[in-house]
Length: 232
Image 1 (cartoon, one colour):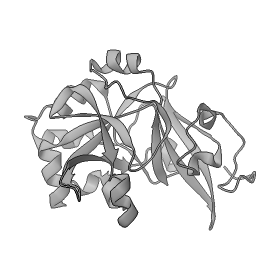
Image 2 (cartoon, helix red, strand yellow):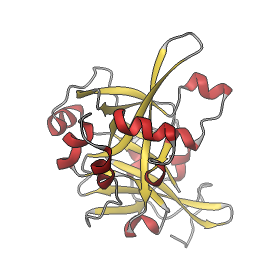
Image 3 (spheres, helix red, strand yellow):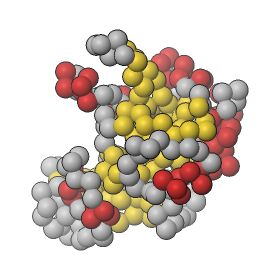
Image 4 (cartoon, helix red, strand yellow):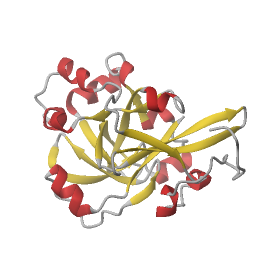
């Protein structure tokens, strides 16, 4: 099951690779989770990285659970759900990441965490949609969703879904508000290059407060309770 991602890349590398400005308060994170403010680039402002809440704000989530419907947008539903279709037309974004995480179910109540990465921990962009709403105080809050696709061969051993990773040569078109929707749909397909790899990591991934480089250490397969397992 796809859960979350990381963006622990040095800000200078991000700025150089995507030709963007980063906010001074950008903080690398090894364990990016819903409600956190995370770095994205929007079609409304493609020259700057903005820190935007994933799915919802922490305050909002205390009174209402953060549904998966606020976090992930299945590519297959973009043209059939009115809310997704509207944002797909004029509120696209890219989510900056250097890996993503998924849990493999090995028994009814047992699962093992995996990290997926490209090349030598290469930085990549995930297709997303952004939106805005007014909070209880009347302030405008921006949020984003991650677009997902069916898993490729590497990911399908662990999860049925994976992030819609964009090829870098398509980013300009993806963030161009004038690009037609029909052509954009061709961009969001399962990532096929053979440089995507995976390995098992520390089950502390389940703790949203565990934000440490130790999360990336390769460890023997262990379930969410920290017990070693022969299944991986």
